[in-house]
Length: 548
Ligand SMILES: *Cc1c(COP(=O)(O)O)cnc(C)c1O
Image (tube, rainbow, N blue to C red; front, side, top):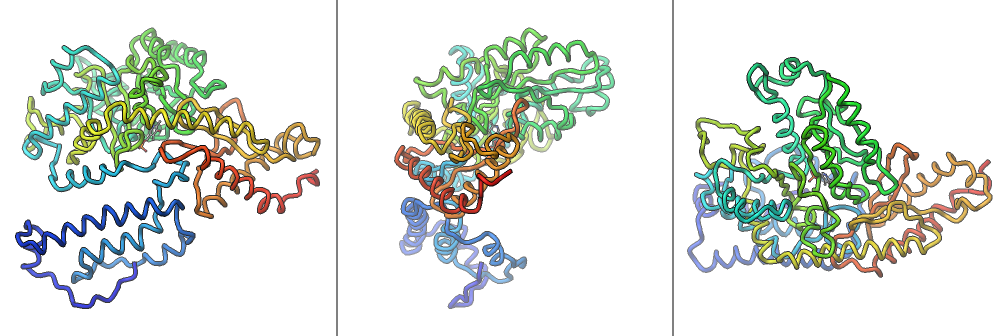
């Protein structure tokens, strides 16, 4: 950021220091602080409402040139007012307006207004959930919030929750940084439960993977997940010492759900091999790329049948669909999971970032319990004993309050809107000759691609008949369409390459519908723009009929 010359020389002195920590007593300074909050709320919010565009058309490279100073200012150079104004006027327009109803490419979107207030409360209270001494009531509040989501997932009976909700020795789950760390936490528990330290055997957590595996005559642990699994699962396998090649990707069926026959065949194969153990089977409730939900009930049965394999459900995206009476059936079987991942910053519409992991068995997290003498003693109620993070924010206050403000019905309106809009959009894509629906929406995610008339399979051109040439051309065209639309800055869909074992790698445009202000009309405008980009900017550079 360009450093503006300040009118008065600012100094770091002790008097000012006092003022920035102490509650202002006089009316005037109180008003100033209130005005700043207003500026943040309305300045930023107005900005997000007014600019339906996604971002201004300045290349990242040019922006990067403005941020090359690596020196910390020796004296203060800006006042709070300057900082706020600069962020609103100079940073925000070049950031990404994720709350635009035209921003439909990612799992990040508009959040309700009140989330800003709730975030401010978390910052103002500044509790540290690692231990009771730094959070007190907020720790027991957190346990209550976790129990509410646990109940939404597993729906156990009232007496179960009465027993465990505040019992220090039980843990229904944990707040974590994000979905990635939720998956890691679940798999951490699964690994330690598979390789505990017990009579005659070393444990993975205490003695390390080498000894724990050696004692049991194991050469390999594997995790089975569909080939559409999120890459955080690979990261987890790396961190947990399995190596990411330990993941066995299972092919998907025509609907992008894990192929059950293949899953069963793989389980049988591993069962015959005494040197390999299956550490976990993962079902996905809303794949990141296509939104498909794996057949969870049958997966749970298979895990049971093959000796009680840990069944994890990655519901980072789909979890909150359970709040919708109309669509919760889509997640049938999730209640049979041993552990579940949910992201608060996705369909709970919380500000970045908030992840959660849940365990059906309230004792499961004992497998990852740690006690540090100076911070938490055995039998203590400190939440930091069973969590990957140490210090962490009281995000539970945001989720707990949001659940009260929205109610299940409020969230259901958002969920239902997204799912129903995706269905309408899919119909529109099918109706337009220039587009092809690649993966139909099960939840509120779909993928499609632009297929120009000349490349329709029914067309006689050489390009259309040669399969490899056609695919390459289509991939190139869709990469360009997506990039040009993004660069124009009015709307945004994302792009991904679907890699499925039975099909060639296919570049697709990916749409995530979670903004309640996105309408069918807006979606039509986005398709119009893509057609326009193709016809006026891409087609003239191609000569499809001359390709030999
Ligand atoms: C988003 C997502 C994740 C990872 O979550 P982060 O919060 O980005 O770390 C994991 N799994 C699925 C299915 C997801 O959609």
